[in-house]
Image (cartoon, rainbow, N blue to C red; front, side, top):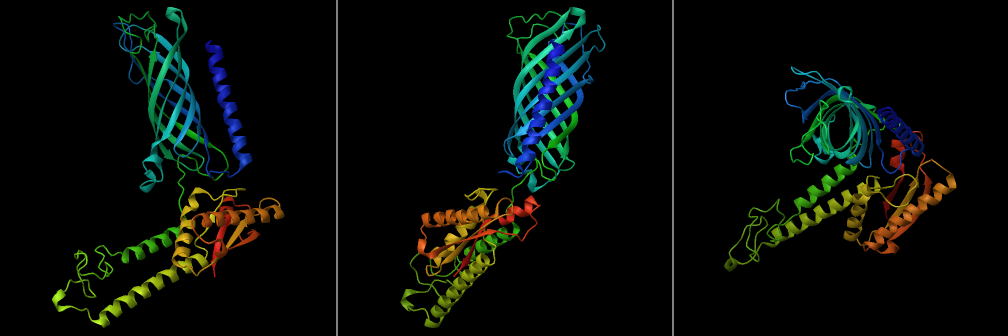
Length: 420
């Protein structure tokens, strides 16, 4: 059986990886702009802890362990991997023996680095977790042992160091527990003494490579981080600062940044600095009341002017994946930005302008840009904006970027706005 299982496993891994590579190269950017597949090679140590025949002993640094795997990530956080392995065990300070173990596992993979946001402090180090099951087969010539099939449960951790978009160095530690084991690791009959066969342990410690498959230049899911454009983040940060400045915690009519008493009792009159005054000496000077009202109005006008300049300047956009008519998930902020402005400025209206990239037929792209604009308009109307305030414009292809760059094309698959 050993002459058939390992060659078939290796052939399966090769065919699956080649097919995945062909699919990714033919589909291009797709819904997720990152590589998903990898071939993984590892070499290192294998240590079988138990069961062992009394008097037999195995080296802790037992070289040799080799493994070959194929991994596919469904997202930046979760995936599956198929792995084949081969181990050879020899004696240490005891009776001589030589046992081979080989098999395969199917495991779920969790990208702990993305879940724990490693990208906030490192761009080169990552950790994957994996758990699953499979089969292990044993061979020992001394005991005429060949293809004793065991069920296997495996879990482990993989530390990664990025060496480029093409791959990463990996250090993996895995623990394999077999059930139904009827032989010791040295090959003798195993007296379980009432146990159910789950006390078998095998450890792998390997160093190797992950070779990423897919379009050249794209990052792999292990390292991909979806970030907002800097201009949008800067605009949102500025709006948040303005909104914070206008907060009035104690509801006394004076913004917190001007309020000398931010915890005034509700209903008590205050002066222009938010300081409580004696009601028996009733009356805030008209000049002070007028000053506060004037400054508040000027600040709101300045904030509206800033928001309008951001919208008309092209910093507020709704983005689309390739050949898609509905906005992608990263565009929620841009839509909410416009909704907020139009609700606060009821006399304002806007052109909703759709664009497409240069890939495909020009007339089709013109229609696609029109449909994108119409879908964004529907979202705005559903959010409470009067349809009469929104004018649809399908501008077709945006030729302002290099059509050969998939990253540049992402920036022109959009709907933008012009306030009127």
